Image (cartoon, rainbow, N blue to C red; front, side, top):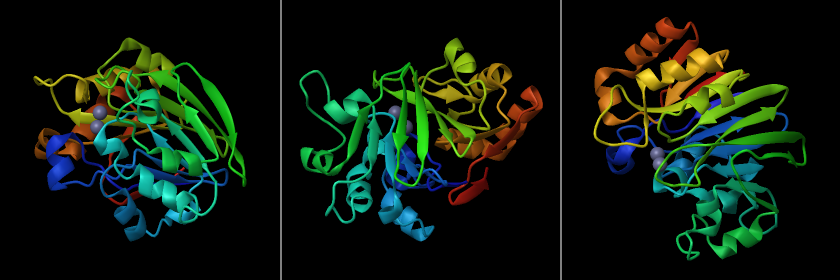
Length: 258
Ligand SMILES: [Zn+2]
Ligand SMILES: [Zn+2]
C-alpha cells in the first residue's frame, strides 16, 4: 500500500497562497484507492503525481470546510468515469453530505450525489465495511472537536493494516485512546504552540496523543504558516524524542509505503 501526501498545508493563508498545497492525501491499496480531504488543488496534484482520479474507489471528506472539500465534486466525476456511471463510495461528515440544519451548504451537489453508488454519512462511534469491487475495507469513525460539529476522524482497516487520521480538532483525551493500534497515524498538526485560534492541534497535543495511542509511525500534516516558519522537521523531531514514535513531517508529494 502506498500513501501520497498531495497537499500538506493548513490554515487560511495556505488555502489562498498555496505556500504548501491543500490537496489532502491518497491511499492506493489492494483493497481500494481512497482520496482523503480533497481541498483546492486535489485534482491537479493527483495528476501531477500520476494518481488517476478514474482509478478512485472512495472519497472521504472529514468535514465541511473548503480546504478539505472543494475538489470533492471533480473527484466524484473522476471516480464515476467522467460522471457516466454510478460508481464508488463517498464517506462524508453529516454537514458535508446533508448540510446544516436547514439543509444548506453541502460539500457536494445533488447531481454528484446521484452518481455515487454508496453514500455514507459518518457518525462518530460507527464502524462500516465496504466492498470496493477489488477488495473490502472497513472504517471506524471517531468524534473530533472542531467548529464543524460533525467532523470525524477515522481508522481505516485495509490490506491487513490500520491507517488512522486525526483531522482538524482541538485536543481531547479520548483521541489517545481512540487511535490505539495504528500502523500509521496521520495527524493534522497546524501549529507549534497555542495561539488565539482554537479548533486545531499543536505539537504538544500530538505528543500527548502519541504517548497514549502508540502508533508504529506518525506523520504530521496540514501544517500552518507558523509551523512552516518554525520548521516542521524540527517539530517532528521534538515529537519523536518525547514519545519514541517515529514521526515524519509531511512534504508535498511525499510517498510512504506501508
Ligand atoms: Zn483544515
Ligand atoms: Zn477545518
